[in-house]
Length: 57
Image 1: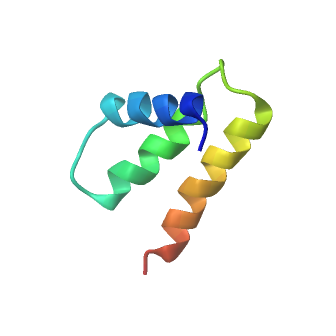
Image 2: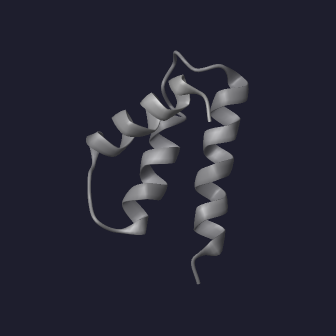
């Protein structure tokens, strides 16, 4: 993961922090909303959030 993506995920997590996997998924999907990221970075973050969600059963 690129440094800009990592920073976006941290900002996303700080927007709504919490101790559950739900909060981690939200951090990735919120990070994808940041306008300073490229389309590829946005897609990658959305994909990671979706993959984490898919593992939850």
